[in-house]
Image 1: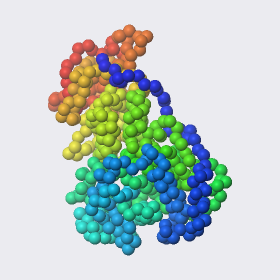
Image 2: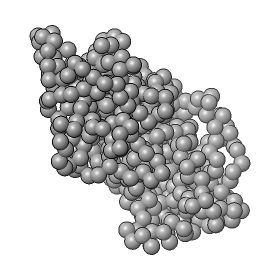
Image 3: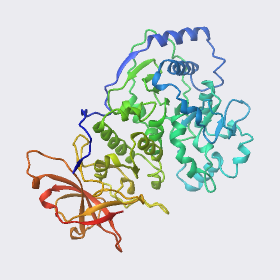
Image 4: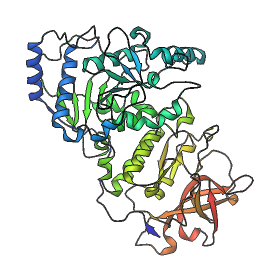
Length: 505
């Protein structure tokens, strides 16, 4: 067997914990207070906004500091070579315009939001047709459309974009032609670049849907007492990570890929970049050296690429666990809602990726198990997802092997991707041991076989007593290969030495 890691790396078991360090940014506070006193009424950026004018002053100042002083967040040369297929021009106060001209080298913002459509399908369809860009209204919007036609969340995003001095905004519902005859399928593949190369992402964390809005109408008292105010006791993990927006599957890749994000939560506004987080009360939050630091990477996944093998496996497993429990309106989006993120990770890690399984972590990622809610496989229509991928089923997953255990895996010829993209070549054996099945229902063990995925070597045990980790499989109806039905672990003595070569679909 070949070791799954080329060399040993130090291990740190970490996660999202409340161990952020925090301190007041007195220098920024003094600068903002000075500007506030000079411009008591901010005509340049206050235009009937429901938000506090000083918030916009703070956000502009933060972005300028980030542009100037945060080396890791600086605009990268490749950003000048990309521009979304469409953006909304918001620089004209009289009307909005959907534009297709390329403005490479300029800045655009993006909106991350919950759609929040009515549960009634008829009403939901009516609202989508009214709000979204469709084949019917697409041409008209190239010539202009009204601000008042849009729901509150979109209006608030336009206000923020203008207040930050930018002219272009990307919103999925408006910039991708939705519905039959639209271009969703082709545009979905560009999501990674759209969010990674944006000037900043606006996260409408406090808005359950696009009709609700996210700008607060509270009095503008931010700047008063900023120099002497105590360190804010804000809870970023609760406000952001625990908020409704971050529980949506599509939003996970938007969050991870964004260079900078402004989170508009129900209690605070947070500015997030590679240097950390700043809350609206001018408290700087620095994350612990754990998974949160990877999420703040402005050039994701560069930090992950430098983290070492075991920490990378740990993060990937954590990411997929988190994604698997996130909400999807359509279950069949499970393979595409994270596609751009996984594709980008595979490119940087220089490894092949198929259906949420990285070749460089093949053994560890194949050993997933489902949570207790074992419903039927997802129906993908004219698409299909192989049974060995966790994307084949809805609901949460976990992994039966901790990332800090060094798994010895078979050679590629014995366990590896087949060129057709949907299958694994495997060695099929008889077995007896502990199992977790993928579906609820009676499965005859005599119909099942196993595929050895790897072994965690215990120097205190003899070879026959070593624990092997396996996939449980059975023959497809009608033959022609095998399907995964579960996962398990067992001692070597309970696994047949004899095998037949097979194909796992």
